[in-house]
Image: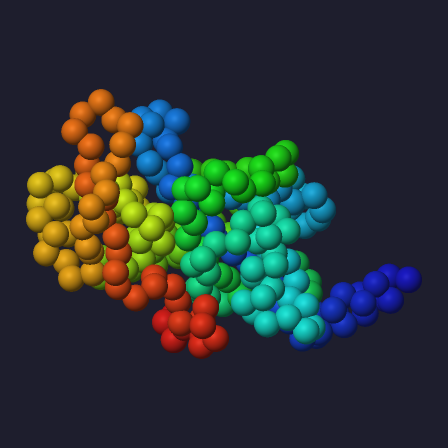
Amino acid sequence: MVYQGHANVSERALQPPALAISTVIFALRPDPDTGRPALWLPLVRRIREPYRGLWALPGGPLGARESLQEAAAANLAQTTGLAPKYLEQLYAFGGTDRSPSPRVVSIVYWALVEPDEAALSREDGNVRWFPAERTGELAFDHNEIVAYALWRLRNRMEYGSIAYAFLGDTFTLAQLREVYEAVLGRELEPANFRRQLRAAPDIEATDEYLQGGRHRPPRLYRYTGATPQSPSATGTESSEP
């Protein structure tokens, strides 16, 4: 019996890696201490071994007839009820020690969610939103995955249109600044930020104003550039690492 057990372990170790999909979902939610927008992500509590009871990124095995994009979108819908417009392939994580036998290679996607979408997401005892930088210990190598996703997001904020994926069709310059501040983790000087954004070619002032405040209503703007989504969302895999 002992010999047979060792044989089974050896056989499992020689099996080809299994493929799985995991997703890092970023959204802006109020910080409970300051009330200012902060970066949050939903996690799923594991209900079986390994790592039973620990929180993990939403994910699951890749179906035999699913495309990577379809599997990521389906898993998001099943676990959180979300269907974000921005869903991009991030990276593949396949370290030999990232999971017990058999080895699992995860194709990781990331999603950026507008506030109205995030407010509609499913949340219960096994699905909960956490501050992106205060998740605690996660299952598998998911702390490493979250850290990598944050690094990529911050780098993309510096030169791309990715900030607009967090906003609705129209927004104030203050709301846009809050996105940058939440993601970059630092305050930006409002006057300088307004000057830079007003000179940007892909932002257009509308004739509408945000109503409901106690002060003079701020003007609403619209992003007019290319849709802020990954090439993978249109059927071409991203070439970035």
